[in-house]
Image (cartoon, rainbow, N blue to C red; front, side, top):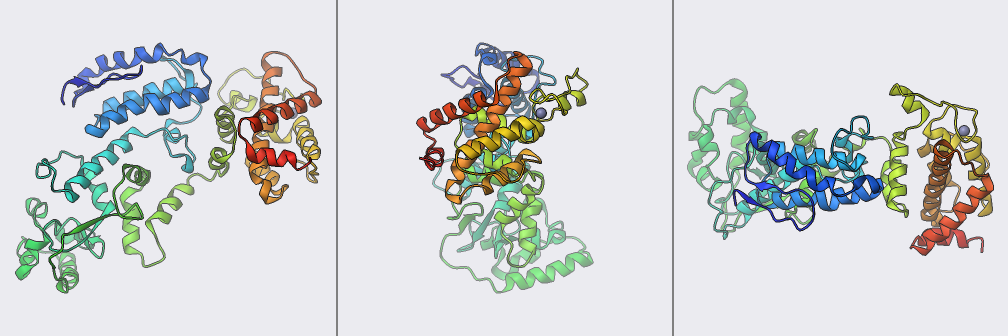
Length: 467
Ligand SMILES: [Zn+2]
């Protein structure tokens, strides 16, 4: 495959598919910059660019990675192209215009990101696929050939699989996870240091168990901790007998134990704590699942619940993207502009009284408060408390106002009102146009009808409640 250009039916990234060295970077850069420039991204909405990034710009490198990995520099450059295109729709200097860190954008949606692929992790997930195929399907012509996978990918693969031993011929004694799903690497890490690497990488369970051959592979003067591990291992291995069945490898991240690239990719989002998460699973007793550990490890670094709910609401993508940014407080409101040392009209455009922040515009501004109260009243719901707090807090309160069967509709309505408030603020800020509250209410009504017409069924039920 080396040296051939991957065909690309869509304008995107033409990649030389080879393990190219850094000095090819310049050529590559020029080639992937031009097609993006032709796209007129600046004329697209951010949501449209997001779709482009996910389904075209990211899809082409993933297609390449399915066959063979991309070198880190290529991944970095593709990342840069996607980042510039998403935030600015052009190639070139985009300093100060990226609203959210790229690392956050490349998290899965359920972890608070935008779901853009993280190429490093995608690459590793595909590497794991080759290792999986090599271990489980010996009928492939290449299955005996050495694979050149990164150390990280191998470690991830080992941490993600366990083996049910049959005849022991397909399982590595020292490295695979075969003693109740745990590997000797984990049980006896100190002892493993006394085993020559070349033996550890080859010795199968079938070779190691008869006559305790594995004991003879340990060399050198063994230290006290290693001796303790040796005794534990001796006990652990002692009762194990082999049978005539094939060894069976189980993938930890799917319920049926089969490999999927998607499950590998998701598991890799542990990336800040990949193997430790697994180690804890092995060492703790009961009541602890990998899945829960993985979720827990991520969720406490992202205590912004609304970011996840945004994607479940029925609303046009551009509106959802606006709210996702608003919950993260990344819109260029006065407070943010001031923090970045830009000139500021600090008073709120809607009420001209208080300082402008995104939470103020959407929730606490008298204009917004009145709008929330009036729209709810029009649908037969009377708000007792004044809207207050951050957007997510108010969202939570707002949901509580409606019977649970209208929750979906209430969410859509919430997003719609927030969106119209933001548009009204922008109209006043950029065009000097100001609309009366009742006119904004009318716009919301018209928009809601359009959304219902376009498929917002739950919003339809909420509106029909009044009859
Ligand atoms: Zn205000």
